[in-house]
Length: 460
Image 1 (spheres, one colour):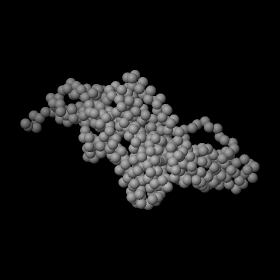
Image 2 (cartoon, helix red, strand yellow):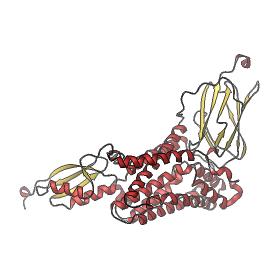
Image 3 (cartoon, one colour):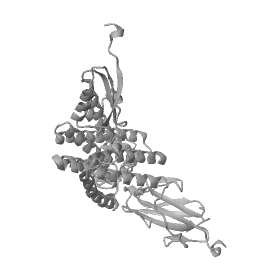
Image 4 (cartoon, helix red, strand yellow):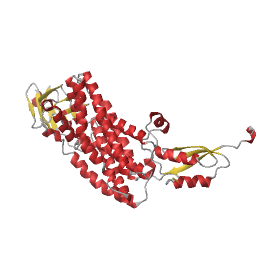
């Protein structure tokens, strides 16, 4: 065949509704490429399109039929789902999320656990068990829930055994989490010092996690098919090179292992407390054992929530996945709110300015002292009103030294500190009138110091 007689090629673009992940892209591209007259095909979840290079032998009717036969629609995905059943399921789940958020705010269970330094690995294990049912679940639990629900939806769409897929995915996640914690704990022990992640990095990480969880939650709820296409996915070319995408179960398992190990870096107060303890040992072997044991302790609660997508079948499974999507969105909101608090953006408005120092402040002619108790429920009292222009001794009595609240930070005051058991004294400089916010390292618990101008008599 001469060059002149070769069939002419044309690029056509077809709008496809319902794609939510790289697996969708691969299925559509593979099916379309197999059609007569189609030279090559690619699909984009974010754009909601399939691009084909075709010859005159290709049939648009066969292309449209192939797409709809896979379960996808033609045209752009709508912004809002018009199925009332979807919205009804989401509304019922929202009630559960509201209760869950209230429960998360009750406080950490670690306030009931003794001194980590005297309990050895058994106490570390108990600390992990407590972490699995407390504020850490707002982040790690949201991630494992998203991983499980996504695996359930993916296997269901392919007609595979959902329970087996979810179990394998979550066992890989837990194996990666335990192994990653152990290996990274070895590194912590080798460092042999105390270090804290910069607060700007913590805030950025929490925002990224919150956005990712929000998009995954929207995808699971099916409330917005258009936004569902924005959920984070690994590009097919990158995933193929790293071995993390595709239909191969081994590749999906590798992805779950990496995600599990990466949770080591999430700003959970429990994790940070144990990390600091591992730092202080100065022993790679001991620190590795400590971090791995802590991860083992968190496994039962995480595995329990991970199994939720396998408890239902058929239409009830779709409703459960939508409910889990709302839960993931709730976790995302919790983390976004905490990140805003860490960044110094308080959501409270309309509070009246205090006129006198609070009862937990002692004033002398030369200085003043704030008395605050830190326990498993945060800071008590959460507000202190002091005079401007005086050196201030902030006495914090820690009764729950391994809860999130024990990791104290404040961008307004310019300090970050992990409280030791008992009395801790933070020396504050002479402050100008205004409000200075502080919170725990996760932003779950917060308080403020309000500085007012002293009365004329006090000034003289």
